[in-house]
Image 1: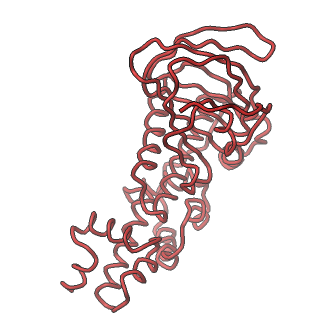
Image 2: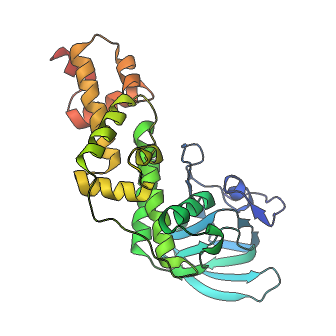
Image 3: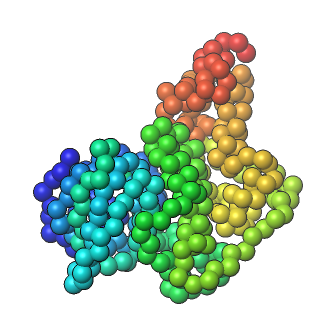
Amino acid sequence: MTRKMPAIPHLTSTEDFENYLPTVPFLTSQKAGWESVMMRVYQEPSFLEETMVPGSLDIHLSLVTSGAVQVDERDIQGSWMSYPVHKGDWFLAPAGSEPYIRRWKTLSNDPFQTLQLHVSADLFARTVQQMMDRDPAHVTLVERSGFRDPLLDQLALSLRQELQQPAPEALGKIYVETTAQMLTVHLLRHYASTDVSIREYSKKLPSHQLRRLTLFIQEHLSQNLSLETLAQQVGFSPYHFARLFRQTTGESPHHFVLRQRLATAERLLKETNLPLVSVATEVGFSDQSHFTQVFKQYRGMTPSMYRRQR
């Protein structure tokens, strides 16, 4: 769906960015509670007249997921450059990049669809500090157009899947944060303007740290736990924590927290007469229906059925 365009600013926030695009996203994480990354999916027009695209305060990534077009682009005072764009092509604009003008026309009978990601500049800066111990002002990304990156594909499509079929809020937050961390580190490794050396750890979490972390999770199941909160309990960056946790336990923090929630829910269903809505709240689900859905998915029966069989 096309719309009348407002005056285009030089730079805009991630939240306002979609106001200056010619189409309205048919899928967006705007109200999903994601904090470090935002996704929008568009059904683009097959023909686009000259349109100015503002710069973004955050990192802007675009993936062509369907169709093909001939694109013409130029800087505000520059000359036109033309190139074909096909399904699977990525585009990367660093945070604070300059606005530009573009137009396109279709090369395919397939619908032209794009998936667009904005990665928080604050997340990028924190990642640089935590993993490289360098001033983030001296580490930037390089603008790229029409490149292929299978790992970026995988990460972006997993986020789209989460948006289409979201996990419970208390679980989806950790999943999205973990994926955003992986995406940010990947950008830093492969698209930085300077050579990057990232510290890696091959060891596992000591048993006493894993016990302390497990106890912390069990004591805070009713809260919307974040990846950073969990990482702070063992003194690692969120990225390193997620990797070390998987190396130690064989599962992601997201799945581990889910197992703890379900185990506690089983105990409450067996040993107490708490209403189901109270059980759901105690183990971190925002509502009873979501709790019932997830419990049935993993236990093969509803919480009510499980309680009757206790």
